[in-house]
Length: 263
Image 1 (tube, rainbow, N blue to C red):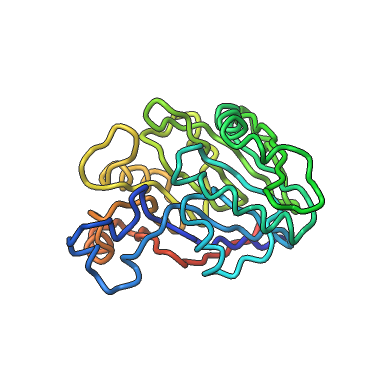
Image 2: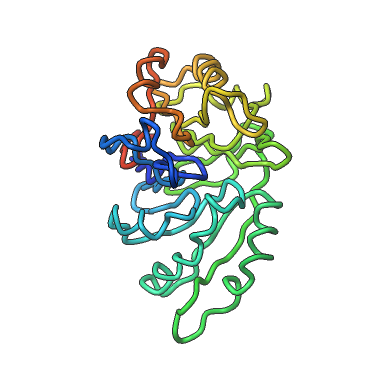
């Protein structure tokens, strides 16, 4: 069996928490669970170290959590809060003296390659920029996974994020579903038997490209993971107030949360 350990580097929305200039209860809280950087995760799979997204706060997240190696990146979509720290992958390319593979949906990879074209050139002697290789992941349409890491299968799903398509992932018995407003019926059979589900939960007010609190609660109950953690939360989701409302086996995530599973 292979151990999978997920560290939540950030569970905040695109504005982070605290929000600039805001004096709401969450933004003025001294509780570290109310301080949320942009949404991303670091995943150790056996002896490999993978990243889910490299958002605006990636540099500080990498320092805070003393990240030493990245063997690959799974990108959910190319919005700034999930992508714009991509240049800081160069430190890992330099340390490892190797290109880093990135994986994602066709549209996501096309967007990344257009905006950060320099990152896909051949390496030079200085390693003064990221050196990346892009690999498109097909969507799961059968029982077989689309990628295997250290013997652990990775399933890849397309979910709507307003007019965009976001990639959601199941890695062994852990799933990461951020930035979505709906889960198609065809995906649910792939989500049976989860140990951990990380699920978008923006705020109480319905929003066209994210799950509201009640929508997230409904999906969490249906998927019925052993434990669900809510991510991509705005400052309107004060940690303790949301935790008090959560269904059984559900809770808000927080920056620095670590969970482990075996597959």
